[in-house]
Image 1 (tube, rainbow, N blue to C red):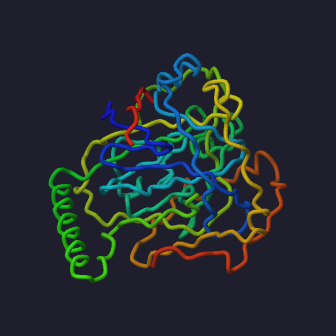
Image 2: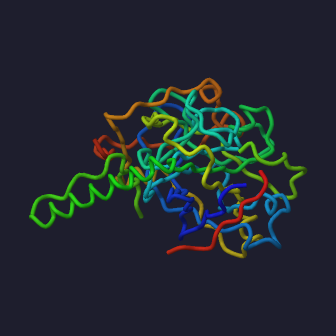
Image 3: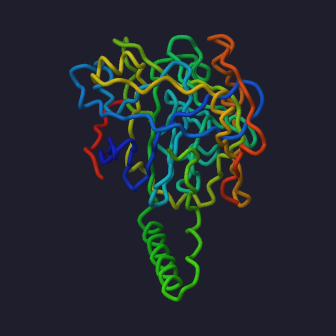
Length: 350
C-alpha cells in the first residue's frame, strides 16, 4: 500500500508530488490514416468511489479510487498540465502499461520504459504503437476482446485506467528545487529590470490543446457492466524517452489510483447525476473551422513502440465499421504547439 494522498481538485486528479492528470473528452479519429492531435472538448467529471459506497459494485469498493462516465466508443486523452515537480507516471489500461505493453508493475523500468516523464510529456492520447505516433484511447465494454487488456493478455478482468506516480529521490528532488528557486530569482530580476521574463523552466509543458500494479488478487464475478480502453485511429504524437539516470527516481511509488470507467446509465444510477451529453459530431466540428493541433519537440527522443502494443487492433474490428462521417481538417485548421484541495481518494487492492 502506498501514500493515500491522491485527491480530486475540480476535475483533476492530483497525485503525491504534484503530478496532475485530467481526463479530456475529444473527437474520435477514423481508424485508418494518421491524423493531427484532436481538440479538447471539456473534462470528464470525476467522483470518489468512497462517496458512493452504497451504490457501486462491491469489487469497486475493494479497489477504491475514482470513476468517470464515458460513452461506448468515446475517445479521451490524458492531460498532465499543471504538474509542479518532476514525476515518472505509469499509465495502465486494464493493468497493461500504455507505454511498454508489459504487465503492470510497482517498479519503474527503462528497458522498455514503462512510464512517461512529467512535466516533459504534456499529454498522452493513446498507446505507444508506432514511431512518432500513438493510437487513440477509445472506450469499449469488457467481454468482447476489443480492449488493449484483452488483446495483450488474452483476458479482460480489470478494465479502467490505472495511474501510479514516482517522485525524484530525496537528493535529486532537493537539487531540482534549488535550481527552480534560482531560475525563479532570475525571472524576478529580469522583470524588475524591464527585460523579458525568462524562458519556461526546462521540461515545462505547454497548455493542453482545446482549453474550454501487480497489486491484489484478480477480482471475482462483476456485479455491474465494466468498461475498458481499446484503440482507435492513429495520430502524430511522441512518447518521450527519459533523459534522467534511472537512479534519480525513488524506488517506490508515492501514490496510485484506480480509475473506473462507467457507462452513462450506470453513472446516473450510482451518483444520481446526469452524465455529460454525447460527444460532438466531428464533421460538424471540422466544418466550423475549429482547430486541430500538431506538437513537435525537436529536443526530445521518441520511444520506439514495443511489439505487444504495435499489434493491437482498433475497436472497429469488433464493433463494426465507424459510420460517423469524417471530414479532414484543412491545413489552416492545424495549429502548431511548442518548438482548491479536495478529499483524499481512497486506494484499495488491485
